[in-house]
Length: 476
Image (cartoon, rainbow, N blue to C red; front, side):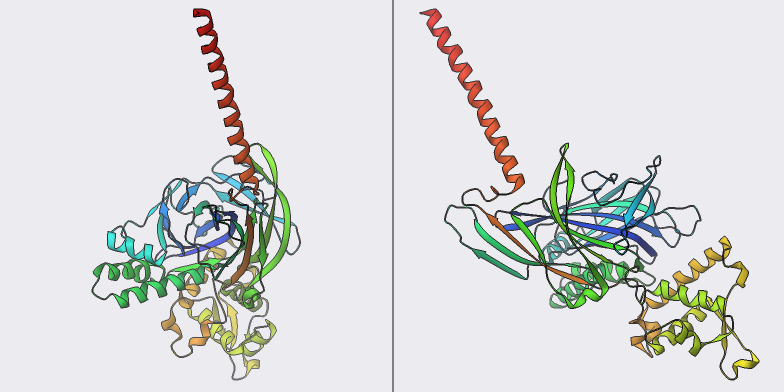
């Protein structure tokens, strides 16, 4: 579960992503509905479309199981907007999210630009052999076309694109499946347990890359697989200059199904994602409020500021601006860098892209001092801020290129844009015999509606029978 976004050869920043995964136990399996609210900005000009990668097989259509589509973001308090705090609702095309901070509980505002967006299957991957290969690998790749393009982060008044994606995958990667007390009524019934996981965008990319390269290697005679590798990897998310940074990533596992329980599991990868806790809340649906349970995690650069490439570069830049002429060794020590060799390399790369300059001073002896590329009193200048952002993009592109770290490959490991995590969890649910969803709230609603239809139908037939009998009596 999860999706990955990119724009080939371009740098983008996902300022916020809320990943809601709604789970329902039905007919012996778990059916998820994944709702993604994404605030994304282009860090370069000319980003007119995005590409989305899913670790599940899905078609591209309106609604239904096994599909992916773009939706229109709603406001706080709506069905999918329950997470947000009440905020200002400006006139279209701008709308404001107020997001609760897990650390303080205080919300912060995120304005987003609403633009019409459509999802379609990748236009270069529609050949039957490629579609069959992706279906076998259980992977999907879509193109997201945005009217007017993705807003740029370089303008002082620009706001990120607020994009909503709704996915309903069919085939999940299940680590463990357990079924108990199975009856013989033709429908799966009894108690069920599935072990699942939510993974990060970086892991999704790595898994898809491994699957494509393995399939292509094992089938060298299939030319379509070479095209798949070229489009998705060489010219896709592994294309030179492709950068994706996630600043704030919230993950919510939720269920309205009263018969299904979500049990978070312990995990060694929790150092890059924080477990916020489990709670209950109310969801607006069909004109009424219904209770549901959810578990929440928080990740991204805000949660991992000690290794976020942009935040650490800004910390060094601001410190150098405060202490102009500081030596490299003191700069590394006083900014609290964990790995001195990796930090020294970061300072060299910052100098390479023009964020820092060397400053030789007598009192520094043989060691050079460093200064920011701007004067101390220019830090708040909008033009300087724009130049900082451009140079930070150049730095991110350097760190996305393994060839820039041939002498010391580990130099890239200390700083990242996509902060890796995996969230294992267990789902446990019960289906009653004969009616596999009878104990769920949706099942009870369905049964009530069926009973109502049956009652109305019976009443109609009763009236018709009475009329026919009366007519026969009058004729006799």
